[in-house]
Image 1 (cartoon, rainbow, N blue to C red):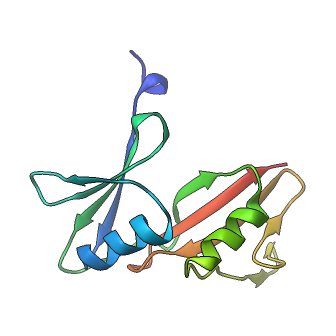
Image 2: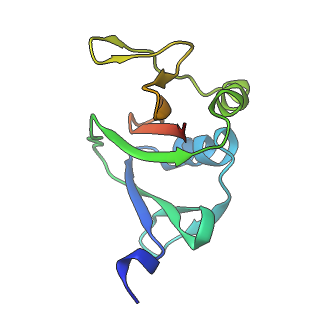
Length: 127
């Protein structure tokens, strides 16, 4: 078995497990798969992979994208997530400008949002 065949777990920090569980389960719609013996919250992804939220007293999320979900129709996914209370980021930088939350460089569309702990999450759609 090689790494390309492996099921993965994306590990993200959280300072408030209950708030994070509400966000990932109710706002993002990820199935809650329970708690590990170490108190980590596990949410199912395709192919048996997981998002694992690790409780920490002080959360220091990365300023970069921690995880990105590939979607077929980014605009409809944004509308669906916004209807569940997810707020998307907008950027107006020299090399990154979003229009209606979406960055489009002709090869990829992307939109970013934050989880309750400030972890940067993304939707992306290949063009």
